[in-house]
Length: 191
Image (cartoon, rainbow, N blue to C red; front, side):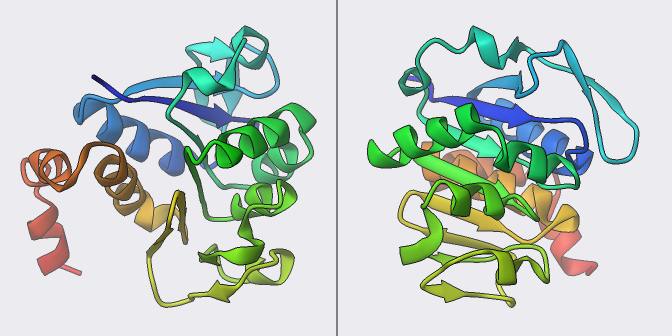
């Protein structure tokens, strides 16, 4: 059975951190609902890209209909998400049910607000570690997976974030079936 993800975005969210994981997950057969946390039909990203959403937050009747919840970074989008009590409650509910919770770049502050990071190993965009309570912080790992919590550092790593989420949900074979045709090995060899 296909997995289903709630991907919440806000005005000021980082567009690479929306589109790259969204694309990878959908290629991997994951059903992803792109949801505006501000209840509008579209958001305007941190670099002025208009993005149409699949749903609005008011359309989400039960967050537990999803297998995971994801947020992108970017500013001020991460602050807006952190200050959205409904988004925070959704993260708490998902984490308490041992479902996937994931955030990239500045957005681990959302996980922190939900009380999720304090006993976890995490990463974030440089400097945001001072705004997160954690057990262990990595500034070397692009993506950190600790149980059902996935965090990543920033825009250039958005594809790796997407692959980590896909692998968590569907397994390594599913991840490789998407990564290989997307030429991830060529990318790795040229960095």
